[in-house]
Length: 108
Length: 115
Image (tube, rainbow over the protein chains, first blue to last red):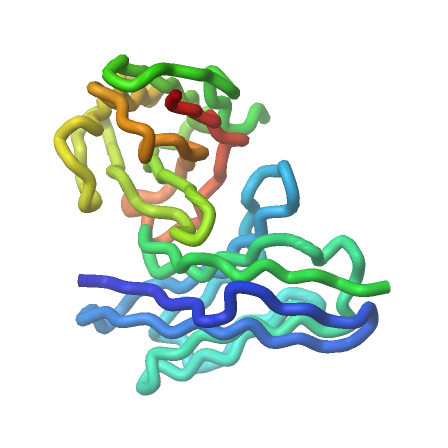
């Protein structure tokens, strides 16, 4: 069975600082995709970043980057230069399985 | 192009009733998946449909069912509603041949309250 665990229910960061959200997963597949999705308050879920497991290079999208450790089954999201608009629920996903989410607060 | 559309957006039901939620995917998308979102539980996968066939199923009781039509629109039904079914139900569509290979595009959700 595939499982996704996000152990940080809430995180807080100061505007312009860097924050890392953690995610671990379990799967017996050798090839799969990992995702981070963002759900702003009362708004639609959108994709933040995607990582293909067979690619060793960590994915990067502007201020968002991941640290993908395949052997450790770890997939963390780093947000650099945090902005007020980054405040949201962040969900880690493995294929169709999602974690419980991390609520990120950005302090001005 | 238009995004994923879910109807109704809000609904209130009483225990024992049944409910049907609708999801229209992005044009050209053939995969539709459904999720239940509750505080503390994150998103729990209900099922996925592709070309009118249920391809994957989560760990939910048989009261939760779904279907997909030839135009890729999907419906999910919950029968004999329980208080614990109160949640935000999200639908997502994908363009790939497998949900796992592509980005999911989510609707705004249908918020169900069971009294």
